[in-house]
Length: 359
Image 1 (tube, rainbow, N blue to C red):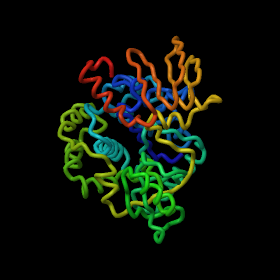
Image 2: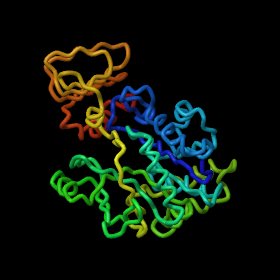
Image 3: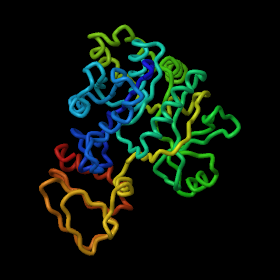
Image 4: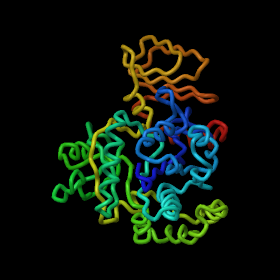
């Protein structure tokens, strides 16, 4: 394995769209919502093990999830868990990892991946990531992974490729588009030039730092100001001091949409970001009536539902069609699948009217 290759797993999100199973103290990445026997973050870690040296893994997470990371990936040493004192989106998270890794190894190449995605064809996935690392040997670029769309999905961002600029299997990126309307998504898919944005990136640590200098100088100045503290006993305190000043911004908005050296490797490996209960439904086994059930459930005259029950509880469901029914601890959600975009609003309402114990 190449000792210059590093994996950065981003694991700081709260997963509010999976309420009430995903909670602030135990969010989605630490759950086995699909019933596969392992949490999302554990699957993510194991997915990279064959191509990344064990000592070159880093997980960036909120400080309150540090112990959860240790539970799910006990192989990590304390210094491989980068604890953020508060959430500031993906750009500061990546800046932190890039500066820390670059201080250790100026020749480092980094793959940055979310902790909560589904990949069905993991061998193909590793092949694509390895190609990306090799591509950086001769090309000083920012690389992202695009997924060939199989439907006009409005829940994903899209990457448009420049068909006139291609190096091997890598195309220069022409545009990024955030979640489009259904009509626009249909046009994107029909054109053959647009791919889903997976949110997986590969780059050299010194190149992404250069891009922070160019496009997010206010973020770069903060992390550069504590350069002497990385990988020392002073790191945690230094990070705690600068994070409140960090701008809350994603790496897509802050850098990827502005840089002029962004390329994409387009592929298919059974990917989904599993961002909603409906996406869980799409990837789950279903009974003869199209119900995706996890737990001890009896259904009557019920079809097209996703039903998730905790261990030790029996549920009887009658007369429901195309509903999300999720029970967890002290909260129960019953919501039409078509209205799942309201779940975040429900969570805020519950927090405001019933208190934080329920979220």
